[in-house]
Length: 517
Ligand SMILES: Nc1ncnc2c1ncn2[C@@H]1O[C@H](COP(=O)(O)OP(=O)(O)OP(=O)(O)O)[C@@H](O)[C@H]1O
Image (tube, rainbow, N blue to C red; front, side):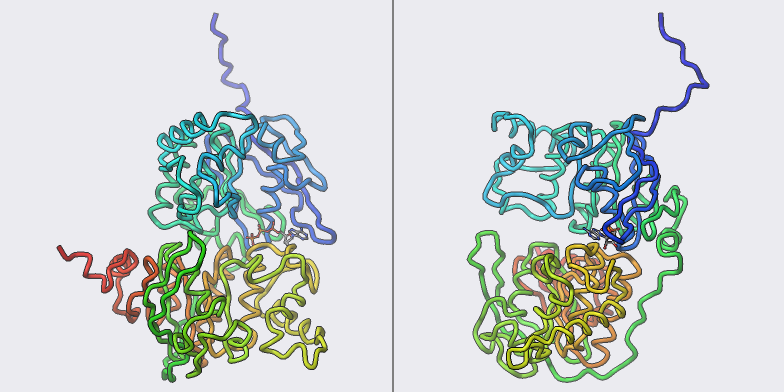
């Protein structure tokens, strides 16, 4: 006999639920009594400003961090998630923002590392192919990792996660590294996972994407839950208001100003890093005058990193291939270029721009000791480094648990604010910045972009390398595109449509050449 269904029976419990979940780091309360419920078959956004507590919450759900108090329930039952392996065994998968893949291994070999049992590599390769085809995540299981684009690497992480058949998939800012086409592809995959009855917990600062994709949103502010809503009923503006508690300001364009002389120039620079996976720079030339911002647009992996490294002096070139304020600097190292008034913000905030194990003042010292003379006659002027750090924290609203925290204890977006603020603190004559607002919330992104515009308006030459086309259009006076290591001629922003820029990013020098037969 069929069991009869009682219409008054309660709906199934959420797949995962937290009750008063709390996490303290010393005196910092990163999560304060959070209740969140994620149901099977929904895409649930987790929103909040930088430092609101999103990463802390998902790390507890994946067993990386242990709660100070509160409860996690899985399918209605209290559970203790004391390791990622334990979370995975229950059916929880996570795709982190920073991938953990081995360059020298193939796709299938990388997947093999994440699997609990020993499965023959041939079988793994076959399953990778099957999953990648059925979920619209095209991958060659035998491709070496170092050949893969950022988007393809993320697919490896997702396929690796799906191999375990998770019921809940957590994604931390998955679209920040993707091209618009790759983002579309990812959304289709997530929709399919939802149709299969799996749940997706999705951290993002891109509110228009959240509105389009997600069924529910939980909003955190300063460690507390402030709202649960249906983002489809909201606007990006109303979501931002819930996160911040006030309106997001708009970027103000620079007042009309005269351009000064050329402050940064590159003349026919060609270069290839010894590493196999690097992109060769080919005959790159550019000029930036005082008072202007040159935006460099491009899909990740087209030589942006190499261009940044060339300008910052991570490697040397012919003396006159790069000039700062009329001086040949091609042979000079980064500190000497800094002494000449240049400043640099690399894409990798942790590792390249900041050392996690050091306090912020020590990081300030490391980066500015040459340009700010913080080690006169061998004395370490740490009190000056601390004073600079205090000013940066204040001006850029860096939210931290103490006056001089370890860099590793800052949330990703707050560390980015510190790094950008530190480099801007000296009002450099030349600034080169790679992905200035990566991982920062809408309010902080506005503040950083405004600071770049104000710096140029005061007479500096600024190069902004960014994958975010909205950002490129918002801050730049002229835009060039980088493709396969070649930089197009720069065009004034007013004359450049997104379509033309798209063609330039695809390698057509003027944007029209792509139409040629
Ligand atoms: N290991 C730690 N030690 C001390 N404080 C920490 C540690 N990890 C995080 N915090 C603090 O906890 C708070 C929440 O950080 P969390 O990384 O969860 O924020 P977030 O919402 O993910 O931010 P973002 O959008 O910038 O990534 C921040 O104030 C951060 O400085």
